[in-house]
Length: 82
Image 1 (tube, rainbow, N blue to C red):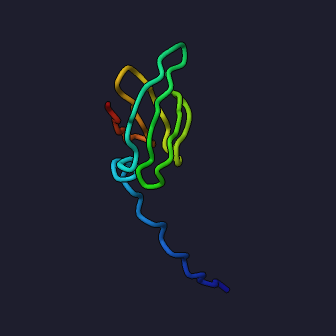
Image 2 (cartoon, rainbow, N blue to C red; image 1 turned 60 degrees about the vertical axis):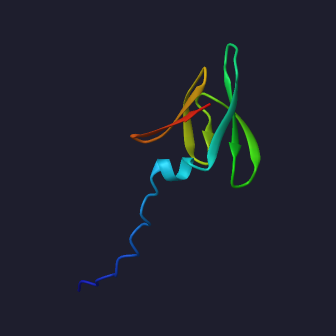
């Protein structure tokens, strides 16, 4: 006897990185051996200090350079600039 089990609901559509990262604003860079980005979350008005390799709300900080931070999620990239 075969029992057909209804499939669960489909997963929600993935929100593009550009839309998720648009809430972040780069406000500064702390230079040094391991540069840190100073990022403001405009939705929560929270200041975040992040280095390369850290995650912000599930988004990877791929690189921190002078004047620019590259965020990534899978094959998507998003630049934050001063």
